[in-house]
Length: 271
Image (cartoon, rainbow, N blue to C red; front, side, top):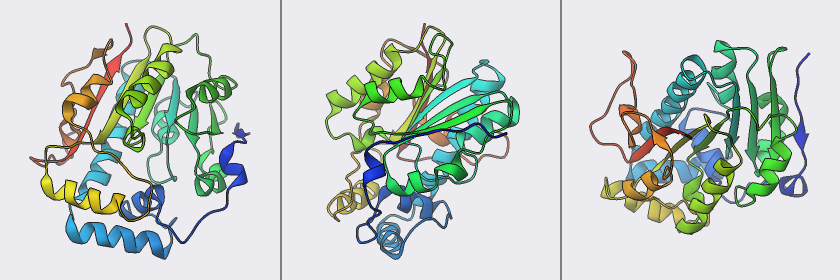
């Protein structure tokens, strides 16, 4: 029997707006998904016309997520995940990667997009031994996230916090840091933090495309310097190779590694 739960929140009272492009749907489009609308395809095509490399970034980000989760389950022994800002379901979602290795893994997804909520049941398909749950909440409300996730996760046990391309949506850098601090503060020693985000100061064409996207009416995404991304891990033990372009984070034998990519990520352990 599939174990899943959906916690109603802000998105439950929103309608899906198909007149404005949305980052989760555009990301889904770049990954080859079908859960998007013409306005998202138009915005995605306008972006790729300026910077075709965004498709490589999207797919490299997904590959980084897959490799980091594989490490966490297979080598670090993590059996609980809190994935904040999960976006729309696509290939190799957190629970799919984790439960392929250990079917008893428990995962809580967090997002506040009504379209993601509409797909929650598809996203939440779990093995009988494990559990998945969906929390409808904004990343700006870490206390609500923790309270709702505690219904599925045991925060006395090591847990991995996944923040994949979500902190860029928090405009204020200090606020983004405080969100990370609050969420990690609730997790015990032996927990892990995985972050990857778009980086500034690497590729000016990417920055031009992102600035144009931010002016399109969509929810802005703020690129940050590598030093700023690295500072999210302050107080934690960064695993080798540190904060690097995501294709360079422990690539497998079949993973391609472009020389320059403006998407950095890392994985760290809470001492």
